[in-house]
Length: 108
Image (cartoon, rainbow, N blue to C red):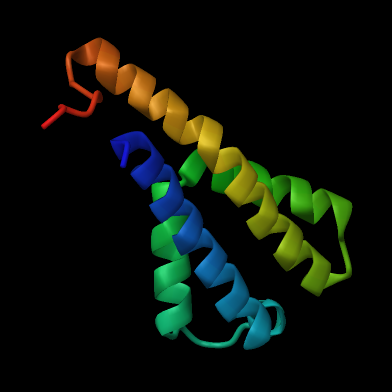
């Protein structure tokens, strides 16, 4: 498997799993009422830090679109993070290859 594809798929799987976990456990509600820190939030914050540019844009756009419907804001935020993470990681790979790193798979 191509290393780039593996990075994209792993990142997408992490974002999707946190989205579904948060949606099914009503994390969108707990975020609004100020519930304490738990394992979900630690994992979600870690994934958001890894995808920081996409996370900031996703949060901002979702909060502009849905000001009072927090469930839709939650889902929209994660969908935007998922969609924007692909160009973000593509840019990361491009910069890495220009700096001198090798991103091509070696043939056995």
